[in-house]
Structure formats: C-alpha cells, structure tokens
Image 1 (cartoon, helix red, strand yellow):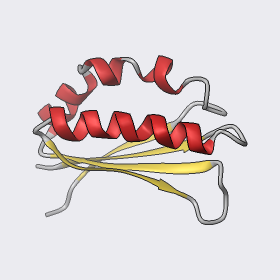
Image 2: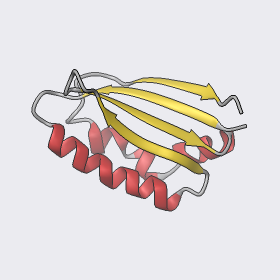
Image 3: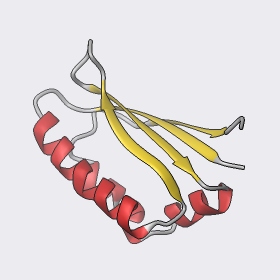
Length: 97
C-alpha cells in the first residue's frame, strides 16, 4: 500500500528564496537517491508567503522508513533549522487505491 505524507511548514519572513533553494537540493537528493519515492513536491501557499506544504508519496511504508534513514533526511535540522518559524506539522496517510 502506498504511504503519503503531508508536512506543513512555516518559514520566517524574508527567507523564502534561501529556503526554496535549500529545499530544491534536498528534493533532488530524495528523487535521485530513493527509488521508493513516487512523488515529492514543495508547494507555497497562494495567500501566505510563509506557509509551505510538502506532499510526499512512497511506494510503501518500508520506503518511507528508508527515507527517514537517509543522510539528507537526518540532516534536516541543520539544513532547514535557520529558516523555520516553528516545528512542522506532519501527517502520515494510507493511500486509497
């Protein structure tokens, strides 16, 4: 069964360009190094420039577990911590197929 993740993030005002650049590098690592990833995309709110949503889908729960063990995932606090206005809200979902 495919597994989805929705991560709602809020960044500090004025850091959008730097955050998005860092995220693009992270996204490239996820997409190129993780064969279990079906979709991994960042979306910015149309009404609040500090609000982002990451939509993720993995082949199965094992692929999500593998994602969480990667060096780029383990480096999230160091990579993105300076940009964040607070902790993310993360929800893990089961796909209905």
